[in-house]
Image (cartoon, rainbow, N blue to C red):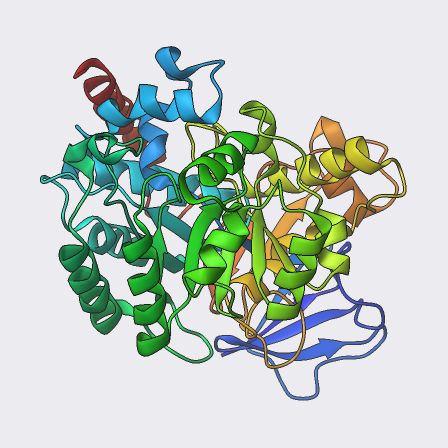
Length: 446
C-alpha cells in the first residue's frame, strides 16, 4: 500500500513541501515542490489543511493516575507530601479500574498527537500483579506504540521510605517479573510496537540493592533503564542525609550512568553533573506542566541539551499534570524555558524537536521521531480551523504558540488511528462514564 500525504499546510522539511509517501509502515519518499512520487500510489490524502509532525513521543507518564486527577487531599502540596496523601488511595486500585485508567490515558495521548507512549508503573498491590500486561493489552487494542517501564518499590515507610508496605515488593519478585515481561513483550529492531524497560521508582522508595540489581538485569537483558531523579531539592536533601551523596553520585555507584538510561525530571542537576550525563549518553524526560504544578523547579533543558544530554518530553502523571495532552506539553516547555532564560532561551521549533527526535533518543528508538525515508510512518496531523488559530501566519509556529490541543489525524505504523479527531471504534463517551465511576470508587475507598 502506497499512500501520498500530499502538500501539507506546514511541517515538512525544507525541500519536501509537496509531502511524503508512506509505503506500508515506512516513510518511503519526501516529495519536492512541483514533483510527484517516483512510483504510482494507491491513495492520495489531501493534507492542504494540515500541519504534519512526526508522531509525538511521550517519555514519562503514570497511566493509573488518571483515577486521581485534582484529588482534593493532595492539592497544593509539595512532592513528598503529595505522595503521602495519594499512596493509600492508589493502593486500592482494582484491575478493572486500572484497565480503564490505562485506556483513558492512551486515548487522551493519541488524540493529542502522541504515537509512542512510555509509562512508568511502579505500584503493585496484591490485587494488581499483572499491571504491565494490562497496559500492553490496552495499548494493542488502540494501536499505540509503547515502551512500558516495569517500575518497582521495595523501601516502604517501615524501612525509611515513603510508600506503604502494601504497594512494595521483594527484590526477587521484582526481578523475576521483569525478566518475564521482557521475554513476553519486548520486541527489538525497527518498528517494534511493544518494548519493556526496567524502572525502580526513586531513591526514596527503592533500596540500593534493588537499584544495583536492576541495572545489572537491564544490561543482561538488553533493555533500557529509567527512574525519577533530581526532581526536587527535598530529594537532594534526602540522598545527602541517607546516603551521604547527591542523587547522581548515588546512582552512578550503583551502575546507572550508561547510554541506555534516561531519567524523569532532572531539574536539580549541577552543570558538572550535566556534563557527566552528556558524556555517558544519557537522556532526561522533561515534564514541564507537572514541574510547575508541584512547584518542583525549572529544568535547564537547553543547557543539558548543549552538554550532550538527550532531551525528551513527558506529560508525567495525570495526578500531577493533571492531564495527558502531549501537544499542549510542547507549548508549556517553550514558555517554561523562556521564563527561565529569556526570549533567546528557546525557539518555537525546539519543543517540537524535544517531543520527537529527542524523545526517540531517550527511548533508544532511531526509527522514530523524524520525517525522513526509512523512518516509521508515525505522523500527527493538526488543522488550524479553530478560533485560536484565526489570523495565524506561520502554520508550524501556530501549533505551539496558539496552543493546539487536539490532532485531526494520527497515523501509527502506516495505519490511521485517529480520523477526524476521533479514534475509530472507541466509544469515548462510554469510556469517560465508566472511568469516572471507577475514579469515584477509588477516591472514596480510603
